[in-house]
Structure formats: C-alpha cells, structure tokens
Image 1: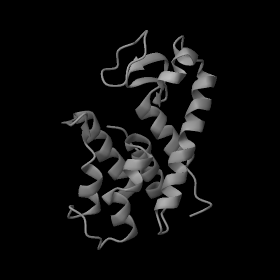
Image 2: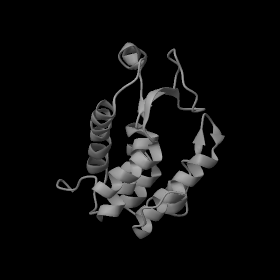
Image 3: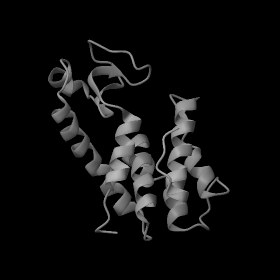
Image 4: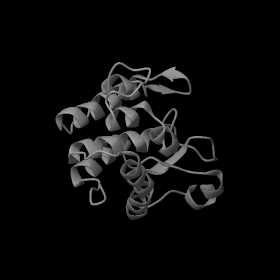
Length: 166
C-alpha cells in the first residue's frame, strides 16, 4: 500500500467536514476563544497545543490553514499505510484516513477496525467491521449525534465509495 495516498476527493470531503475556521475555537462547542483551552482548534481541525497557542491565538490565513492541514494529514496517512496489511481501494483508504484523523493515531492503530480490515475473522467485541467503525461515536464519554453522522458518512465512503456529507 506504499503508493496509495489520500485522494483529492477524500481531502475535499475532510475539509468540508472539518470546515475552515481562521480564528481559534473550542472544538467541543464551536465557540470562538481568546485563551487556550483543551480542544483549542484552528484551520481544518488542527488541535492547538498549549505550546502553539502564542502562534495561533491571533488566527491564521487560508494559506496557513492549508499548510497546517497538509502537515496534519501526514501522520494519519502513514498510520493507515502501516496498520493495514491488505490492499484497499481508494475510497476505503480515504475513509480509513478520515477515521484516523478524527480518533487519533493511537486510537486507530489499536482499533478493532484495523483488526477487522486486516482479518475479518478477528476476535473483537464487534459482530462486523461496520459495528466496530460506528462504535467510535463518543466524545468525552458521551454519545454524539455529530460523530454518529460522521461515522455513517465515513462508512458509506468505505463500503460504497459514496463521498457525501450528512
């Protein structure tokens, strides 16, 4: 899977979901912020670390947001490539990157999703890959309708090649 990378359609879908924000906001509630909080975010879903706050507290340009997005994507593309041992179609790879981007490198690499993609007979708590995929529906321990919608859209991309938002 060395030559596979995120498609233009996949990148466009992810940007449409993450939505461009040129000023810092709290990812939990979408409110603009003027001081760092856990979940401080800018651009296309870039989490701002406490150490980065002084760099981004005044906002970013569209060009800076695009560069952040491209830089942020790299570890997620790489974790999908290194975790998945079977060939994937472009739409499957794109969907896996979307999931990894949202749940994190560690969450993705150790997930039942990865186990079931690599071996559909894997022993996991889930009856199917779809169930394992859609189980990633919580934020801070609470089921989130937004994450349910996102997982459903990602699953449509993975299973049917449909690149649509909800």
